[in-house]
Length: 475
Image (cartoon, rainbow, N blue to C red; front, side, top):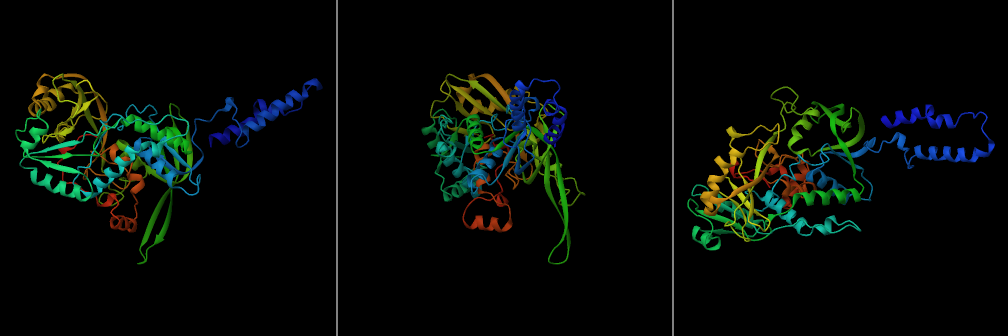
């Protein structure tokens, strides 16, 4: 729309004057003027260089087959698999709209980058197994010609989950599921735990599960940048802006039983340009909500949750914005290089960070303790009151730790069951570790769901969880 306006206005600008009758000009400079006019004409023709005076390169295209709302790891992964699987190449135009081009508030880069297979249902285990293969062979997937290879700094130190007497039976059942899906996880008694990790106090621990391979942590910022670089090389378009409106059309149809059904389809997205009052309408066929913690707000733009109470249209997307704290501390006498990602029965977690006896960790608050998500300020008293006591009890060396820094990040928290939903959002807990595999392995029609289950490939419609909420660290 804006481009059309600019084009129409050119007749009144310098180009329009150049094409008018010239008065008194020397015939000797005619060729020079004609050359200038030709350049300006070429600049407004399709495929030509745009005149800087009317630069619209910051605008999204007027149409795109797919519009992805959100340019984090999930949105970029969707874009990657769409382009990877398209036939022929260039058949699909994909636009990614991201409002935070610095990613300063992105859940991905503010996480602690963990990946594990220790889940309670097969689908989550399968998703993790796929993701770890992707990360292990990342340069086979994300290599770009003439660019340096990616180093996501994967640390395969494993996950160590601790269970109390009350949670031991659940842990045993979970490990059975994990082993059936191909994960290499072992159970350890308190005595075995002390022998392998002598720095752990096993008081209150009845059982432990330890991931022997394909678990650990990585650099999520490097993964994000690698995905972005790759999809740009594949022809994915990017726009710095915010989706503010969906325009839809309705069709009244009848079912086989004669019941009338009103079907709505989004055919246009309005994108507000960053730091501007301008907006650009983008015609599209498909919209993918990958807005993470803000996906509930995007869903409302499509009318989800806006209908009469008690109806499907009146049911809100069960994804909320939640704030979590991550603390970095130093402890010279702390656990060494063999330290895994430890999750305590209290829900407190920690892992090693680098080689200098630094550690990252935190704990999910209770429902009553949920902090205000309106900002990313850190509550340092939360560490003293809720995080440090169980840390020091489990690892006595942490009695003398010193907090060096801290930050807060956002979670897209699924209030229904803390698992993913078919809109590719609400992955609280598993986080970035599953974003690589969700787009490639998820279909949303009932028949494809049945097909996926028969082939033992993950489908989100049958994901549930038995783990208590407090045991989920960010990852």
